[in-house]
Image (tube, rainbow, N blue to C red; front, side, top):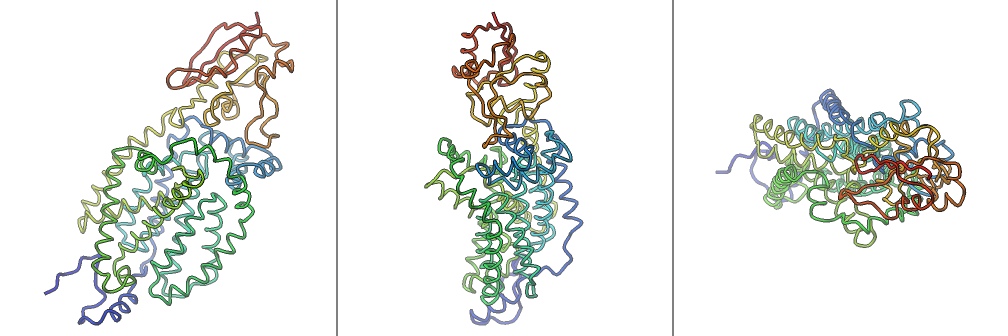
Length: 537
């Protein structure tokens, strides 16, 4: 007597056993294909909920260096922006261009500039629902959409003025387009391949490492094709489509590779520590990470067990008869192949940052949802409780992400308000130039300009709109003094960066001002900064 199959492992027929080759053919012919209407309304509803989850409170945290690069670059006149990306940040050039027109319409406030990322998260979640529904079940699609909406990496990139959320959305939708082609009962049309090519090309244009996702798609052709002939029929048009897409965005790729030295700073940072890889990469919190990794483990182990049990029928059959198994394969490839490739590249050149793998976050969310679905089996109430557990664990992380100093603890909004409260028109402003760009106080001048209105920027050499880099070119305090910038200045406001341990840099420039005829009158402290009032003696 044989054991009954589980719902996820339904056999292709009830007849007598045949030889291995025959079973393989039968299984290959019964690849589950989405026969019901896609849940577009459900996907849209979960997408809108995801937009709200990311957008609410997104205006609270202060901008930080990477966001300042986005805002300042996007505010350049178009000729200036094109000139800049010819020297630096070509990898983000398309995003800056889109943000340029967005800012023209809606301004450069934190909420305005972060809102496009929240919309991108919504598009990503909607795509996750449709992708999972096509390869899995409706219940699993809902679970995956909920997990994707609250995954800490997702809610982080949904509140940031950077391109990562767009990369994640394009990763999902390009995968959906390819899965739709491969799993369809009908031969793909030219329009189907054009849609896939546009999405894949846009992904690479938005962020060059998206090419890793395109590489994973080649593996998906092997995993999802109904049989060998179907796979061979798909490989040629896929390769042709990818070649055209890459050719279209090749200028961005060439400039980005030529500018690779701009990420050389990664060599000085520990981006591959256990904490960075196991917690910070996608989960942001140790408790959330423990539960998430356990659920991912359940999904992967279940897949391995099923493949081993059915390997006698051939791998095509093993994958074809397990819808949840095929979805797990897709998610595992999208989540871990890019990470492994980037880690391998990092052994040769500095290339790894957890943020660069944001486009894999949707796949991780799908794996977490599969783990819940496996444990729940047919019990919907258990699936609901599992989803609620994930949401509950995500809430504290979501709240932390919306603190005023959540992004690199910059606190520039407080600094601008403090300067506006005490400084007067005609006073000079000088910034500590010693911190790294991601926390440099001078960036508050361009991200929260209201408090600095009417002040004289006496160390400015070249405004950022005219510079080759994305920041202002500035003089040191001695250079500005030698150029006569302080000759008629009676009051100077000096902004000094204060580290978490309360220390300041001897290279800040304050010592030179005190030795050049100025005396400290008062000082005011704010988060990670000290505003010093100086008057000429």
